[in-house]
Image (tube, rainbow, N blue to C red):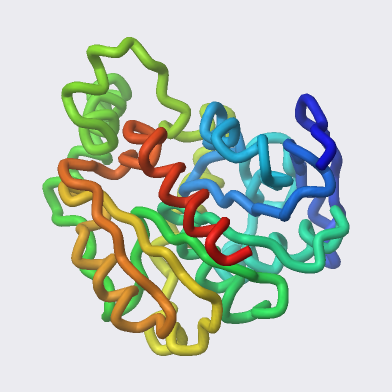
Length: 270
């Protein structure tokens, strides 16, 4: 299998006129792996993490509407279903008839809708630190919401880091790419909050036919771990793996272990 070095950049125009920024990495003839970012984040979310897959997989990411260099009118019609339709169009544009899909946080909600509304394009599915939404979800408590809504930006960032990582992570001097797109407009940020909060796949999770791996951190306060088990109960061909001590960014903090779990799951299905 050939190895293509570096990222390949392109754009995709959607049927409603949005222009999505796309990045591809890894071998162009490898199995396609679509990586879906969290809320209010561009595909920079996958910086460093995509390296864990590009020896073997053709990785595909795109900037959601409102993030990165994607260009789209800001609209209250944004939803996880719309973002999933964008993802399907991205796959078509890069010549991938279908792909493995790894979605994290809000990206996991988008991935659910992709598997439900566009089942033919989803091979194996990985959902990390995410929820089904609606009445089936257990949401973060009000103390978490207050901490993330503080007016002081430094205090807000400190709180977010604490929800993402354990104290041990800070000793390594690593930089997080999970803290949001700093160039988003305030309206786009609010729209993303609405997209994530409005997600509700509870009654339709039974429609997912993809073999599914559900990953979560045991100490996630942003999306409590009970949501992983709810997803596992609702998706027929699924299994749940919990990282002990992991917080919302467990897939980044414990990337060597978690990415290896994902690779093994995908390889077992090939």
